[in-house]
Length: 114
Image 1 (cartoon, rainbow, N blue to C red):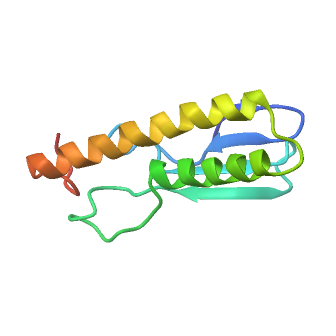
Image 2 (image 1 turned 120 degrees about the vertical axis):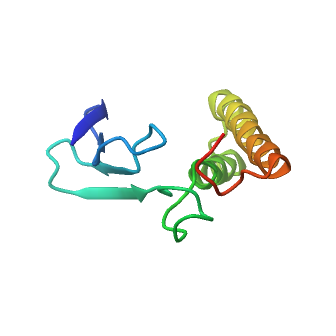
């Protein structure tokens, strides 16, 4: 386990070793004392065409955060910071979706190759 972010409310940790693609695939968000688990995130490990679909994708988590911020903005406390974060997250999601489209066009989507 390696802590990658910590504050007085939460601790975010990597829970596995680096995989073949160079990234980690399991994370958790806990209380600072690690007694309460708030979120466990398992990401796809390997190409979906090569192994069973077995985890979330970066785009999935971005969609969740975007939805939450949109709901906050529609609620009683909208703010400029949420508005700016939404713009950045939307651009990040667009970039990742464009990457997927490029991989489909090259015939490598779902495969462990560039």
